[in-house]
Image (cartoon, rainbow, N blue to C red; front, side, top):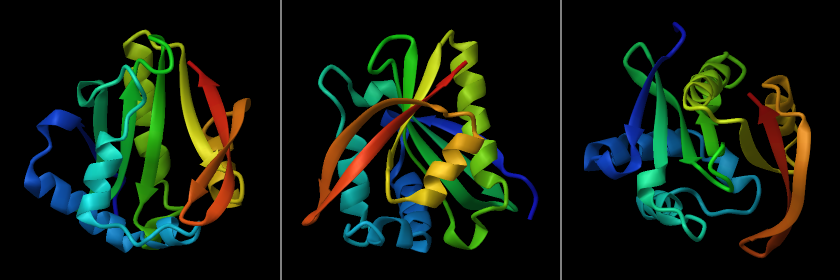
Length: 170
């Protein structure tokens, strides 16, 4: 497969077909959700994730990056612009098809986000990672997210996790 072609869609502009395509990817990467005690992803959980925003943010602040290789969606990222401060963006999730992890697709999507953020005058990108996800932590550190900004608890299902928020200056 070739490196992905990256598209950007405002969250509010996602169509039912877009959501179905993203849900198909989430099903191909369901291990990402299940490994921390979450339920397998559904279209309802996708819609809930998109609507679950911090106080003061709206869907208009959200953009979806999608990576396609050979016409197939291979990865996506949900990005919240202007939170927790105007000069920062948060990558809420970056998910790659489980069969293609380690292929460079995640890096390409992360770099597209960083490029756009820098062009918009953003000073830092943030990402929250469950501390037990050692592969995810290693990925984000390779992407330049080195400054630990915060640790907080998170309950998924009945399991308590620790989330580490990492930062990358731009």
